[in-house]
Length: 176
Image 1: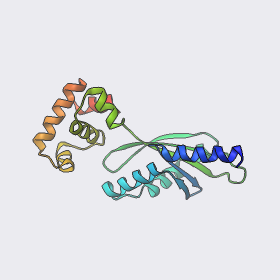
Image 2 (image 1 turned 90 degrees about the vertical axis):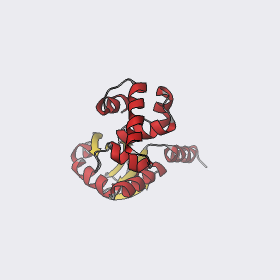
Image 3 (image 1 turned 180 degrees about the horizontal axis):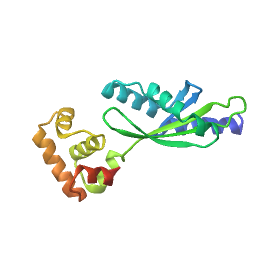
Image 4 (image 1 turned 180 degrees about the vertical axis):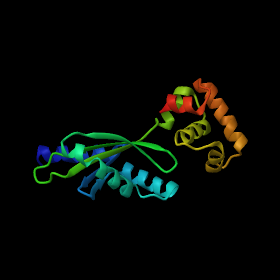
């Protein structure tokens, strides 16, 4: 095994271990997606009944010009419920393929465990805060977590107090 082969193996292991969704396209064809991208695609299909690859291909078609000129593109893509995603796309330098593109998709917001620790949120409060970041209202939070709407509202009131905000907008601003 050459040092270059060893580096490729280590790089693949690193990319596969990322929580960030990473995909590689050749033209319109998907060549690679890491496990995080597969999990995100599954979640979007389950929650919104949309195919992430179809949405990404359409989105990337609109970004073709800046990417073809060697400029990476960072855009905000919004899912069906208003859940925001950052999409970062860049051309990959390749000897034989000029249209290879690396794409990362990052969900807007921070890790549930990190903000739960920082603000001393209970597990349930962290779940509620995460759903607020995804654009859910109290009725939807209650349904998603199998709790009463009044319980969802009570959790949200405690979250506001612990984080030091007065509204959902301020909460999203603080945590995103």
